[in-house]
Image 1 (tube, rainbow, N blue to C red):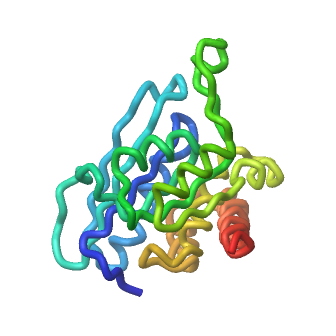
Image 2 (image 1 turned 180 degrees about the vertical axis):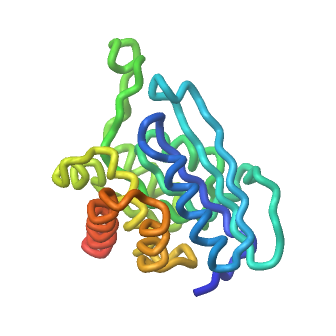
Amino acid sequence: MTTSRDALNLIICGVGGQGNILLSDLIGSTLAKKGYHVTVAETFGVAQRGGAVFSSVRISQNRACGPLIPEGKAHLVLGLEPLETLRTLQKYGNPETVCVTNTYPLLPIGVLAGKEEYPDRDELKKTIKALSKAAWFIDATSIALELGVRIAANIVMLGALISSGELPLTKKDIEDEMRDTFPPQRIELNIKALDLGASALRSHN
């Protein structure tokens, strides 16, 4: 599988503690082993307090790219939190951007303190759809909770992204990378999470 866009710009967005950086490392390593030039960069908010975490992954068959994705130039957005997905689309999206987002919200401190109001979920989805060429919505956190490991929501989302066909990777590519890099006791659970994410996206269609 190859990508028709060179470079292909992927943004992974979420908040601290959701495993954003693990995803960018996993995707980047897998692509590099397949012969792609991959540049990964992270931007941290106050991650330990649930602040925004933003990873850019630039993928090319021919050249090494600069680490920063220009505004309005994201091809793919993988959102681990819906409000962060919207914020990313508003800055980096364009009419051709494809989006896969977790629907489960993580409320910011201001909302928890009663000083701010979290957007209505239906309105969030409506706006994300309006800003995307295609958008899939996956309740990855609830799926991960059924597995008993909330943090596995990031791997559920990765399974959904791979199933979309928008990355030049297969599920087997990711499984092989997991077996090479994850501790043995974590592999079975994460492959299950990957499978459930892929199934969730296919059901979405």
